[in-house]
Amino acid sequence: MKLELVSFDLCPYVQRSVITLKYKKAPFTITFIDLESPPSWFEEISPLGKVPVLKVDDKTVLFESAVINEFIDETIGTPLHPRDPLERAFARAWIEYGSELFMTSYHLLTERDSTKLGAKKKELFDDLARLEPVLRQGPYFRGSEFSLVDAAYAPLFVRLLLSEKISNDAAWNRIPKVRAWADALIREPAVRDSVVPGFTEKYIAYCREAGSLLY
Image (cartoon, rainbow, N blue to C red; front, side, top):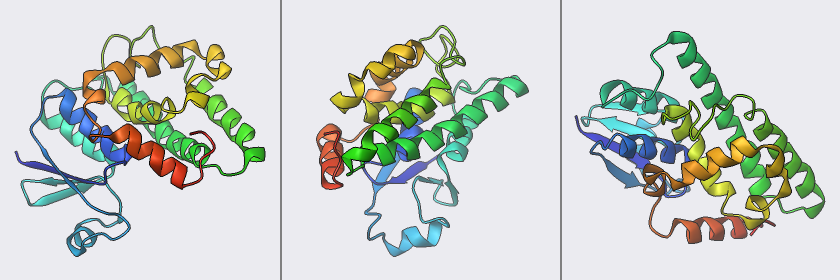
């Protein structure tokens, strides 16, 4: 099976799929585009105009990271989703919650108004706190087993912890299981290897250009 991911180099949603593919040691290629000026062929294959897009055998095109990851999970290697239907639905629900957290964190990381920064930081940590009672005894979401939930949240933590003002915030003290999970995920080889060369510098430069007060 030939797999080609279409991406731009800082996209957290694409990173979810890269992590899943790398964890499963699946062969794939990745094509980077400029979303500000996408090529005409991308507009033809992406109905939402977003990445990731996964081309399968140069014929079928899939979009949306959660859908792509489930396809990868069902067709390659040992499943990362639970086999039990209830556990699987539970995992899907928290993956969706993680997608919402991306937007909360994006608004925080690109906030230009210092008077609003504290409120947005509190909102983020309040949202993260909802995960605290859900997490098991680590290091991953389901305990000792890496899952699609971990692949979904890892890009969020990678970005948050690049800011010392976030990574050193005292608010982590009230969500120690979430922080331990975040630290475990950014150490995971499939996560470390899922970003482009020079990612840290590129991402920080992107946030500073957007006027971020956190870098």
